Length: 581
Image 1 (tube, rainbow, N blue to C red):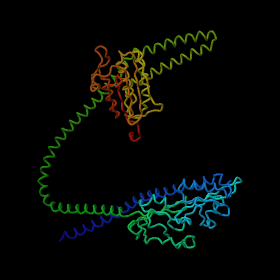
Image 2: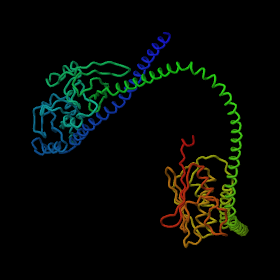
Image 3: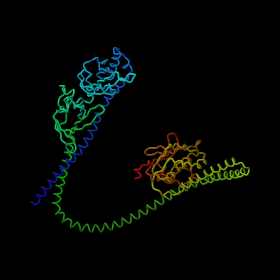
Image 4: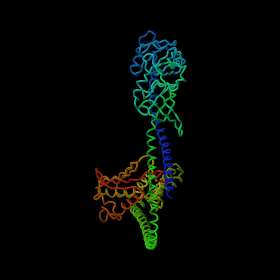
């Protein structure tokens, strides 16, 4: 009996929570339904406005035809112009009126409609564009009217072109689509809808009394419906056949371009079914959870006795785990120390490989610096001589050449100092184009010694990637020098460096040498294809380059090119703020 109040309370909580879930889910579903409904309503109304706007532009273009203002009333060419335009556009009719609103010519040659009672024609006679929607007196079909003024050479409105657009033919393209959409004029009369049950009904018939069409027997009252505001939504209950939703969300949208209002009835069944499913699922989960809790409570007393025995076993096991934990900590410490030692060794190896590359180019560096120094001395001596002869112009040219040679020496020294420094920075944003050009400058001496050239295919704009400037330059320099060495026996020695932006960024280095004998082993440590005595390193250059590119989150691969030679491709991640975060 003590459990009975608990069970009752549990069921009350489950019911309340289920109702809460239903209300929340229904609100969310209605929000989503309203969003999609507004999108569908906007799409349908924009299609209608676009279709009508084409006829408006056609009426304006026709009114601009100088023949309509120039030709006489009895000229049959007027009717031919209107008939040809009507046939071309598919309009119901095109009518040309004079200032007294008398028909001058028309495409249909009808004359049943009294244009003197048309305010939209009066608007056109005053030089503005007129529009009106109503039932055509000529054909009995629903039509949209555009009235465009025809100006004479003096700038006055002499005539008016009226375009009669068949709304029913446009409506056929919308028939049966979802949701239910209808468009009303300023009196609430529905002239356009994708549901035939709503056509030619009046939303607010009492408001239309006194309007020209209120006495038209073809206009029926609107369908029976009730409305209520719930959670900020306008919900309708409709009784009008199976093609209209019985319970619907009502949405509206003003269409000032055509002077009408578009409305939509969105079926509520999907939203209500979704809310019911979620509420039922939540109730089922809570019920099952409560059942589990009751079962667990019954077993709790039994488990209490077992826990006493387990506590003693746990205490013993805890001591054993504590000892094992101490041993594990010692092992982790040893591994961390080993990893740190390995990292330092890798850094030293990278620096050693870098210094090895500098060593290979040291003779070339000396030659590159010695030549400018000798030239500087010669130009300086000549400048002194020319100054003693008061030949300042020639002396200035010599001093300018001295400045250029000094800048060249400074650029060589700056490149090698930047390359030789030991980089400690983390991965950051670097310009790959600048790095490639710097590596090409460093490799220039090595290329010249081997009678080779490098061709750079680089974009004009900077290409930002994730990496380290010095380490990336070391990778590219290693690839260029390796490619140069591989072409030792080639007749034409050219290294092609191509940069392709994208995700990832691709940098390829291709030579025209004999290719790679074993592409799968090319990144193994101490692997080298150079003959004994020719190799200046220990075969770690590509292996180190592979590790450096991997540390930037990239990849490097080597393979033989179909047209001959080897090609190495470096894949790097483009720089982004998300990657930096």
